[in-house]
Image (cartoon, rainbow, N blue to C red):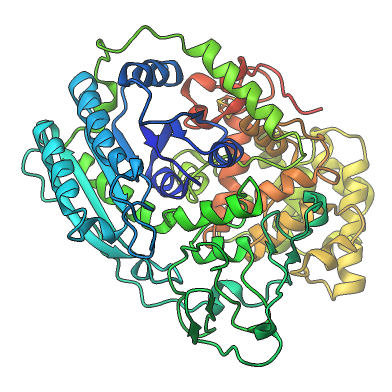
Length: 593
Ligand code: SF4
């Protein structure tokens, strides 16, 4: 169950990615920057996003917006980092009357009002350490006092992103406020991370060269990633050998080293760090990787807006660690249901029309053909499989690779329960490719005729067995290419055998999975796994680094049991909150074309 949160000053959404991974779902995100709003809409299709100046908007309007986007649930927390430029020690243009500094007090006011009206359980505040300096210390103290007066116990810590597995030194002040009403004396600690420093090479090595920016550059001219763009190197320093890895000439020429973490990703004008090979500045995409963003994330806006977005972002791994610590504290304090506090003080809900309106905007904003990913935690399908997955004899450890291949051929257009009746008999009689290749057509057909499709299956089984004997010495090959060279073996079967028989890290995509992805993302997809590259891209993106068998079994079973073609079980579906189709209309039919 995801807990609903409100995201303010959302920026590129780095903190939000982390909180999502920890089990929270931003229902409403607000930022003043059009590029930030567009970025958020593109990458978080399940969230209402508003472009608002939080220094101007009345809190009542925020509550009204929240209620419209959240189906009347109260937010369990508020996360955000008011703009940090006013306090940054690297900002040499600090002004005493910078209006952005006032946003800190404004943030405290919003937190206090939500706490009073909705019983907010926690808030998170992230900012630069410059806020602790002599000049701004009073503001910092006022913020904490306002939050304490609103009923929050304050926890604060300076953390460094490098200790969270991010290849970058990045110190930031974190404040977490826990509502004393819910947490009492909970022993909470802001995580400080324990990772060894990760070098730049871990994320930048082996990347293709980026595209150099020019005024008429279009997205389709950037092949690898929409943000793999950088400024064309003009200074002679890039060619005369004066730049060396690890050296810095002022703020404008800081060269990264392959074997060390990056300096803080916080770039002013012409300050983007220089690639360790010294020949150019980093691309926006490379900076995103140094911040710990996932490959599939895309920043919107002009090049300069993208640089600002990535510079101001919270690294997602840092957000995830903080979110996980808060989630654990919530569970320990037994306030898991806190998000169901009656929101009697909230303004009247007008949720459905509002959400539809937002979705229409998202459809338009993603009209460039790029995919939107279903936002599911990495282990969701594995865990779902452990609790709900189906057990069949070919899924048992004792099943051979040949048995798995035979099962996949039998499962085409056939219910697994029916295959489970004839598969053991077939494998007992023909336990290896050699035996099956010598069998008569009638002998095989007698065993599989109950599955339908006439003699197609018996012919296919014998042809595959013969191919295995003649070309692979009676063994099942463990590569997609070799499996595809066999007759009657298509892309799904080849991947399924590699995953389920050999544990190779590959995705599987069948028509059920295409339907699930189509509904989750609200995108039309070709119902043909040979032609639906979008579904394969999504399957790759959500593939965990370990436990691929369980993940893919979970995906197949979830699509087959929960997200069924007709009458999907949306009411009890654990992914309904992330599912675009669920918010659009009851998903009685597949929307794939
Ligand atoms: S909410 Fe319904 S349509 Fe969406 S994934 Fe779940 S079962 Fe499928």
